[in-house]
Image (cartoon, rainbow, N blue to C red; front, top):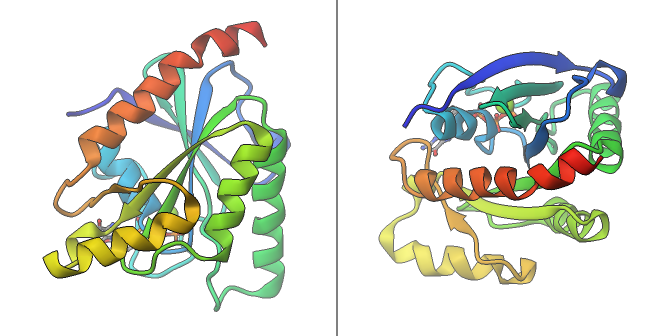
Length: 197
Ligand SMILES: Nc1nc2c(ncn2[C@@H]2O[C@H](COP(=O)(O)OP(=O)(O)OP(=O)(O)O)[C@@H](O)[C@H]2O)c(=O)[nH]1
Ligand SMILES: [Mg+2]
């Protein structure tokens, strides 16, 4: 399924974010976890967001319009050891600023590598969602890399988050349709809130 999605702009600072009343759903996760690939799979447009084998590819906030009410935001990845300290600090500060202060933001998709399970940063993000009244959507990426025998163990690692993860793969398409509907549903249900702003 191909969604009517387009790249709109990138922002290195909050004042560069688009001025619109779209409901935004941001995609967060460790560097190289598959945020950009998932965005492409969700929209059915394989070249919408830039993906890369090298971690640290996305270093700013990238805004994509979806239909006429919703936007998806590809966030820079965190936790990339080889990124310079100054860059990592700048990206970290931008993410915090966006998550705390962006009034358009309605939900956060937290991506976790299915083989790693959630770590400190992902737990922090899900706590932040609760604190900021954002809907957390937790998805385990690269599920195609799990053997059948590893699936139950992989799922169990998510218990610390108190959320059942959606198993997803941009490579074989597992979970993509379900996640797409979940996102479109959040976009729909928040329309009223956006209008009231
Ligand atoms: N097997 C498999 N590989 C994937 C999947 N999703 C992404 N990849 C690969 O993982 C690498 C990183 O993917 P990206 O989508 O660029 O990851 P990202 O989270 O956007 O990375 P940063 O922008 O650097 O934070 C690429 O080589 C992708 O082809 C998946 O579902 N399965
Ligand atoms: Mg990326």
